[in-house]
Length: 122
Image 1: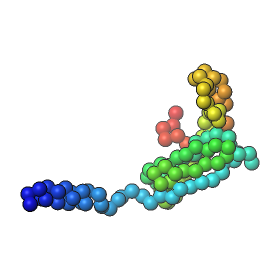
Image 2: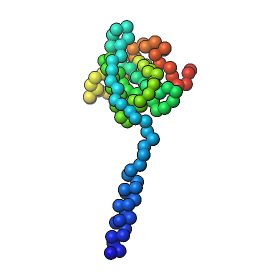
Image 3: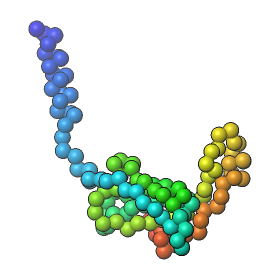
């Protein structure tokens, strides 16, 4: 009978520790297309910045398409959407040295600054 008591205590601790109310915001997966002057943006970063505050969600734009899925997607509510061009890596870097990857990487597409407002202005 003394061996049952530690097992029951362990089950009780496990049951209490696994439940509870989450204060994390509800999120949704967001997908879309980014174009500049009617042309899909080849490579960029997209950020969804909650207004007035909250957790930022971000994703990569590749060939004009993006999908934000991390942590369940973008928190529900109003957001400022920011887009910034990023260097475009080759599609397949298997077997390439760092120098070859660097030489094959295209520079970022110049996206006007008005579409990306850094958190800490320079």
